[in-house]
Length: 309
Ligand code: VAH
Image (cartoon, rainbow, N blue to C red):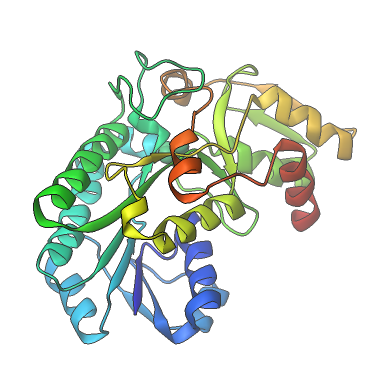
């Protein structure tokens, strides 16, 4: 059985639905601190679960015969800067709980999401390499960098089969983002359709690595399906979808909605975005488990507007 912890989140919701369609609704248990949307709640088993509750997580895995855990619960970059201690505790406690279950042989395989947030202002910004300087400046980034080190340690020392992807900013029409710095790339569509205008909290030329959710979900399923011997990176894999600025995204939206107006009012999230890369080199993921992105900016904008209109 598969357990998705954080099943009601931006990635978790779509990931749970995809896994249910692939492996059978009853074989994928969704779990989160609160209930999710109707589609998620009605399509398969669900548990109210605190990702930091070691006893309860262990009890759910045992009673439901879980052998794979996707740990999608986390506090993201922007919210993490408001509640540093909570972000560190949630992001790290939950990871140790799941890694320990694997170490004790209670589960067989773990997926754990990392992020481009592991990179910092001293990291090369263009085509950021798989192995490079990482001096993250957000609590979220520090927790993801540390988590990567622990995943590699548990794999090397205890043979834990944990796999990880450094997600870029993710864009979905089915789910809303939760407290990230890249959330503008989703909010902009909702505002463009409802109000015809959007005040962007990043400056017009802030280029960031981004990815359409369908690509991110496919990558997650693929890395977990790959033979263990192909997964050479046991910290986390760079993954690249597209790279664009708010202005470039606005231009593509204007092609569909000619009257759309964007203004720029950078807030505290600008400093976070400025510390991150503009584009990512994902050659190793392509080589090791046959990854390749399918969505570019034009296709993403068309799909988002089509589904949200
Ligand atoms: C955030 N969307 O903004 C998340 C992600 C790459 C960014 O980690 O914090």
